[in-house]
Length: 290
Image 1 (spheres, rainbow, N blue to C red):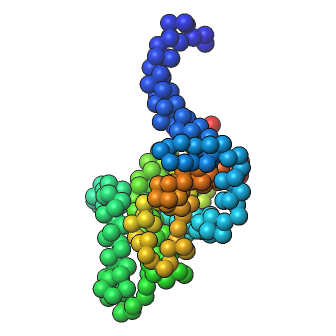
Image 2: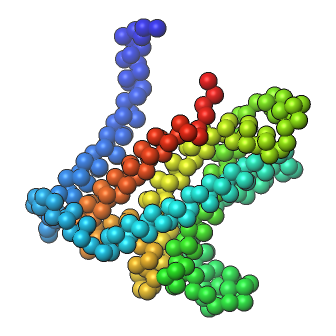
Image 3: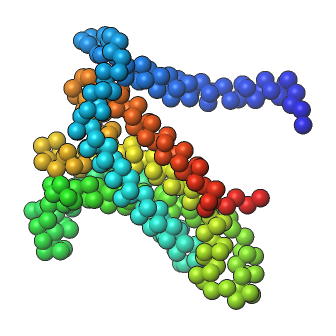
């Protein structure tokens, strides 16, 4: 169907605010960051061209590679566990249990609580001397001071915070599956497990794919959670410091915006590679209803 010039003008007019917003708030800042990554920042906001100096310094830094591994490790800790728990929660809420709306609101509640409040609450719970977790377990484990546990503890908080939001998204996908599919499968003698793997999982896979991408991108950009839970004086900070934490420290505390911009560009590249991999692999497990 051919679109008239009048409709095309109205379409462009209606899309203009969104396009302008994307250009002003997303595209322009990224181009500016990319340009800064090739610059050497000086006093009073001045900068000079430095070529690949920031990238050479970044790739030669042990601290940078440690932060990269911390970020990837955090993603591996949070995404599979978080998505699996969210899917399990959504399936249970989809069973028609009493008070489903109340349970859904309770699971979603951590998403509306300010991240700073969530982090401070869990920081108190993780305290080695008077924390609730050690009091219940009768131990004195340094959950956020032990280098081997600090990132796992932060990942636990991240999963707890996001599982309700992801479960609500997946629940919407589950409720869109026609009930006739399950009725036909039950008449054919399919078990509950067979109905889940042959009907539920394939039909909800597009929503699951969206949730995986959303959660992976969020985990690779983690900053505020680690910043609030792990203090700068904490000896375990190098084992929890993410790329965004390192970016903030270099760009806004040390004032080296050129080097910080190089770290930000590397993070964007990392997210882009992971997203492209996910899109290239979706054909193997994501099923779209045609």
